Length: 112
Image 1 (spheres, rainbow, N blue to C red):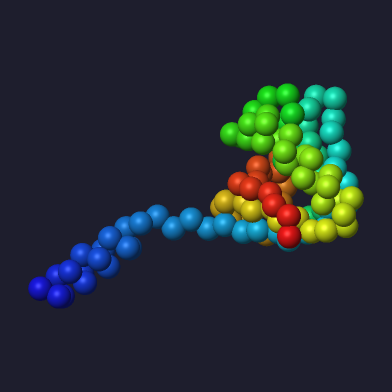
Image 2: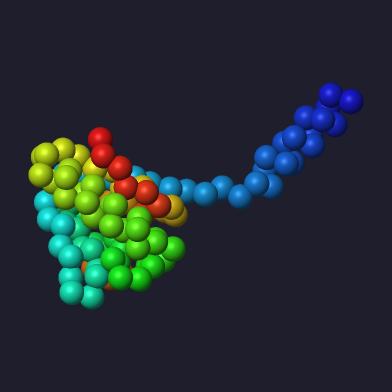
């Protein structure tokens, strides 16, 4: 009986999808807000600009309100000379993130 339970639990765990993710702990160098609402960030993890959201319309499931909060938080982090964390789903590295409008959307952004 124990072997059957162990086998069922093992099969269940093996059948669960595995999701990779990565995060970047960075210094925020620039936060740019474009006329079209795009928020473009330059941070030490990538060394190039990445669009994270849009203040006028939802972008990749990031609501306008969330975008406004992220923008404010990143500006505060920059001003305080603190660090931010950007968390991404999927595989990748901070240095390998696509740039500008091709960048993936973070799952969350926080302060360290």
